[in-house]
Image 1 (spheres, rainbow, N blue to C red):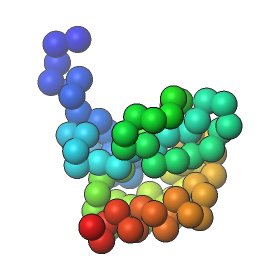
Image 2 (image 1 turned 120 degrees about the vertical axis):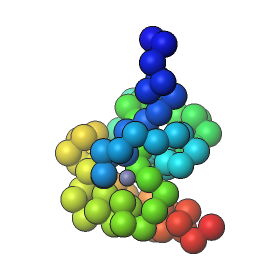
Image 3 (image 1 turned 180 degrees about the vertical axis):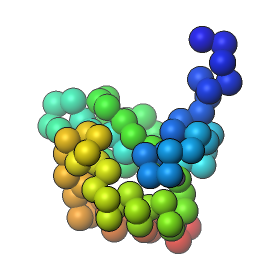
Amino acid sequence: MKQEKKFLRQCASCREYKKKEELIRLTKDHKTGEVTINNDNSSFGRSIYVCKNEECLKNFIKKKRTEHILKAKLPVNIEEELYTVLKN
Ligand SMILES: [Zn+2]
């Protein structure tokens, strides 16, 4: 794997490839099945990414991307946390 895309992750909302720093990482824990924000790689499981911008996040939540891709509901507190990340 010597492609540049190795360092890029695809946003689950707009499907663009971006650097990790520009994205929020969400992981479905392999044990509990719970979806959490996982920017520090603290939990292990399947991950998806979404851009740190309002439009992407709104579509991401509205279209229930976590349910489609991870087969898990996005907890309300995580939804709120995502908007908090935006404000920072
Ligand atoms: Zn995006």
